[in-house]
Length: 209
Image 1 (cartoon, rainbow, N blue to C red):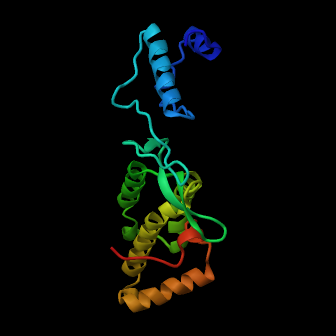
Image 2: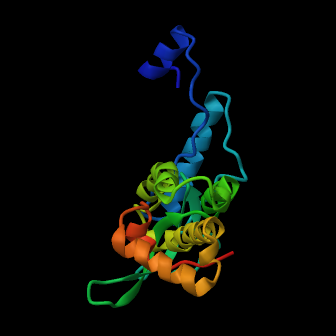
Image 3: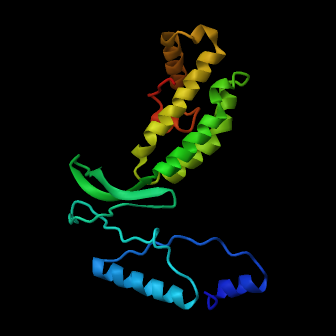
C-alpha cells in the first residue's frame, strides 16, 4: 500500500488512514475465485498482513440461472445482505434473482434507534413538529436502504406508523377508542398525504404495539 499516492500523502502529513474495509471481488467461476483468494493472501503476506480466515469466504451467487449447490450463498456488505430472492418481471412472472436488501443487523440497528425515540410520548409536540423531527432521519434510511429491494423496508416503516398511532391516541383522549383513532388517521392521511416522509411507501398500513 505504501506505493499508492494517497497513502504516501497521508503518511507524510500524519493523517490517520481509514479503518480496514471488506473488499468484494466478483469472479466468473469457483476456480477463479479460489485463485484470486490465494493471490490476495500471498500479496498481503508480503507486506506483513493476513486475511481473516473467519471473514474471508467464497460465496456462490445463486439465482434462476446459477442453480448449483454451494454451502455459502449470501454475504453482507455495507448494510445490505446479498442473497437469492424472488423477483418479478414486468408481466408478473416470478424468477430467482441474487439481490441485495437491508441486512438484519442494519434493520435491528435502525429499529432500536426508533424505539429509543419513544415517539409515542412526545405528546407536548404537534403532529407537524413530530414530522419535522423524524423526517430527515427516516428519509435518509429510505434513500440508502430503499435503493435495493425496497419492499424489505415496509414492515419497519409500518412500525413507525404504529408509534405515530400510539402518539395520536396518547395526545388526544377522545381518540383512545381504536375506531376513532383509525378515523382520525385516515383524515390526516387524506388531508396531508406527504406529512411524513415514509408515507410515500407505507401510508395506509399501521399497527399498534
